[in-house]
Image (cartoon, rainbow, N blue to C red; front, side):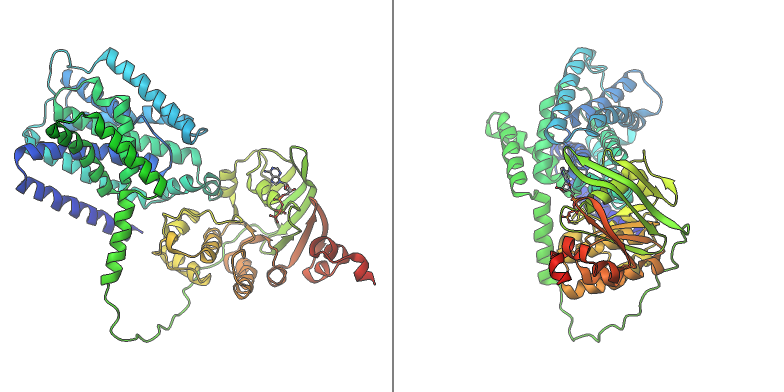
Length: 577
Ligand SMILES: Nc1ncnc2c1ncn2[C@@H]1O[C@H](COP(=O)(O)OP(=O)(O)OP(=O)(O)O)[C@@H](O)[C@H]1O
């Protein structure tokens, strides 16, 4: 992972470095001045790419964070604070962080249009505040002092490029870390992220905090670029235009942010030269954003897709058929050692959805290092049981305990961290991740060799494969591989064979049967495929209408008339006759 991050970071730094040298060497002074604005806006766009593009939270107040950074920079300049512009810019970015966290707090409860309204409301309020207090030095025309090295426009361009590259490289590392993967996971499914032990509030607040810092830095850079600022530089319309362009270009891609910065900076220049009103630019951005949102693909994503298509066309085919590689199974390491005895115990579990009694005093036990099956017809209450155990129900009656310790009062994230891990009936893996990123998200701290071994054991694609390119059946297996790789005391597998062929399901049954021995975890397996259940489980509990109607060894339970009647639709009378 570190190797991949380093490679991506070097690629980004080199691309931007070459671009900067070409701009500096070949563009006239006026254009270098304009291009500097492109990269300052690009930094603001990167901040929006993080919070909206990666984490999926709509922020319509990004320029307000930039305004905080700019105001603090301007204040420190007027106060002639020690350290100079570079330090003031960093302090301006840091000052925007608490503001970002405060704006992030409503995002813990609100999504979509509601969050958009809250952030837009903040942008409007910030407009009023800025108009009232004005920028430090604005009325006295006190210019922000640039450091001597970066005093000229060419020098300031170099400073902006250094900051742009530093932020882009840092984001390459963060995006490939567990924090970056958790942002994508939260964007895709908050429940699935929580099931991996990801703290959804922390993921959201960290995204807002880092994004506000980056935006604050862009504001500070703008202060040094323009010398003096006015409230209009950071008003609500600027935030809206930034959001529209970010949605159009895909600002979470480094070059997408540059392209967006170029649009925001050069379009008004073009309109000015054509003698057209500036508002046309905003209309163009809005249309572009609508287009990107309706096609579901940003300009950057289109570039990436076309680029990889082109690359695959030019990729050289192997000259001769290579000898098939003789694979030796990679070592999986030793199984985790968990407390012996009963790993999971459910007692008197009762769940109501309004008037529907989904579970009625259900009790079951999963001994350590065993696979217990949970079966029953559709609507019997199996998934509700998993939801209750994993902490996804707001309330239930009865108790759930892990290794004898009660789980009541603990959130889903906390239960997952204690060692109750689950999969879902439909896969909820963020498609933007690679297979390896996902396993690292599900199993924090796992070594690269172990990732490869676990994926190989489940016949999953290689770690470098993009989830988006993986078929639905393999995604289900990757889902299971992720939670198994974490080696928790208890795994709850909700219909893992859905989407698999009969032969694949039987193979999966063998694998699940070996999980306790190989990884040390106990498994509660929900399945409709009875052959898989027979293969994998040492014990079965059968539900019907939210009640336990049988439990015991698979052969005995599955041949019991009451189970056949309830589960398989075989009439008791026919059996008796
Ligand atoms: N969110 C909900 N609101 C209202 N009723 C619900 C809700 N979720 C489940 N139910 C009801 O609770 C009962 C148990 O549903 P549950 O999904 O747990 O069954 P299941 O055994 O997992 O079914 P399946 O095999 O189809 O997944 C059903 O009657 C279902 O309609």
